Image (tube, rainbow, N blue to C red):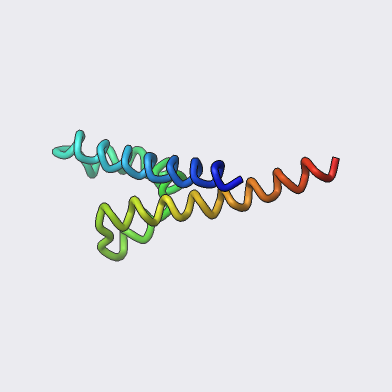
Length: 87
């Protein structure tokens, strides 16, 4: 179970990294492109919502998204484990 939670955290780190690279790759028109993808960004990287109101560094975003995904993974894996044993 620890391994699966680590995978969840790694995916969260990679998702935040992907959005950072996407923002860098589309820099001149970042605000227009990000507005088009804002719903998807908010769902996959919830710390971006806080980033609208307070400055958040890239490292803080990567860490916060990894922790968020790890917590979601912990909940999902715990429920999956309980449902598997209930059968």
